[in-house]
Image 1 (cartoon, rainbow, N blue to C red):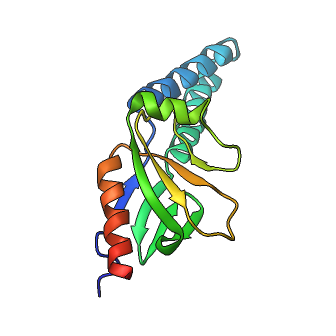
Image 2 (image 1 turned 30 degrees about the vertical axis):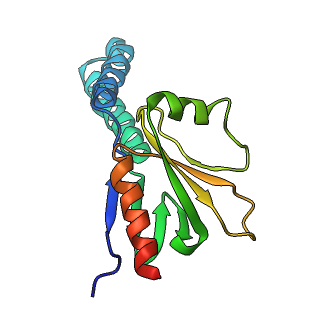
Length: 154
C-alpha cells in the first residue's frame, strides 16, 4: 500500500564545516587540559569533539516528510487538507521571509545554512498559523509532493 502519491523525505543535515568546527572544539578543550597531562589532554580531545559532534548532529537531524496525507516538518504534523498554495523561495526571497516579511504567528522550520525555502499557506480556519516556512534544499520537489498529495487525497 502506498501512503502518499509522491512520498517525500529530506533530512536537513548540518553542513560539513560544522564537523570541522566540532573537531576544533575538541582541540581547544585538549589545549585547555594540556597542563594537567597527557591523559586529560586526550580526554579533552575525545570528549570535546564528541560533545560538539553530538550537538551538531542533533541540530541537523530534523526531517521534512510528506507521507500518509500529512506533512511532517520537525515535530509538527499537518494534514495536507489544511494546507493551501506553496511558494518556492530563492535565497533572497527566503531571507526576506525570515526577516522583515515574517509573521510572528508562522511556523518556521528554519535552518540558516540552507539558502532556499518553501512557504506554504495554512488554510484551516481553526489554526491561527498563517503559513509554514520550511528551509529545504529541494523546494521544487517538496512543492510537487505537497501538490500530488493533495490531489491524491481528493
